[in-house]
Image (cartoon, rainbow, N blue to C red; front, side):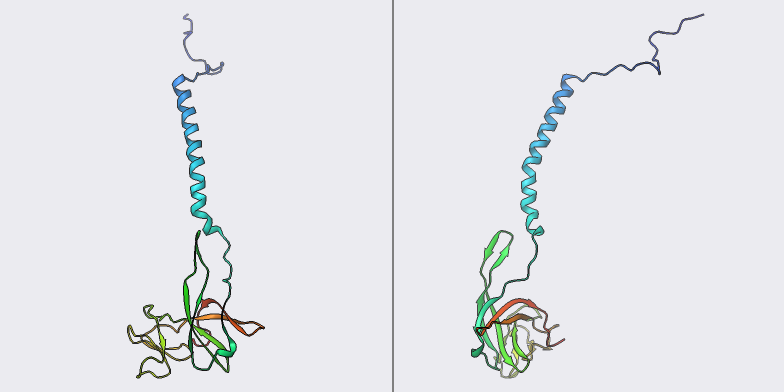
Length: 180
């Protein structure tokens, strides 16, 4: 009878441990250290880019614009500044509103035409008396901001608050609530 070969692998016996070479050790160590350093540098950059998206959106602040006693039934143009924050950049752009007072209360309309974004003016065209008119493409609107021609939607309005001391405060723009 022949003896079993001593070099044959025994499936039930103890397994020999394979040792790590120096080259593998250095490769794993340098790879792990490099990944740690890259992650340490990339994490602040990712947070910098994503943080503005995670900030809670708040209703815009109201801005003091004019005294109620100075308002008439005829729309008047008023300019005001708002604090605008884009990411970490803060600016104070000048905004415009057409404000009038009638039996329904105070109405503050945005002068941005809903057709192509040009600026509308009140009563500046002889053909369209007592209307907002856009000189770019002939859009015109009623006193309440309802579109009459060319534009696809009524003028937006600003949220309005009146303080106890008699001042009009304007907030963010919203869709026109008087006309649909």
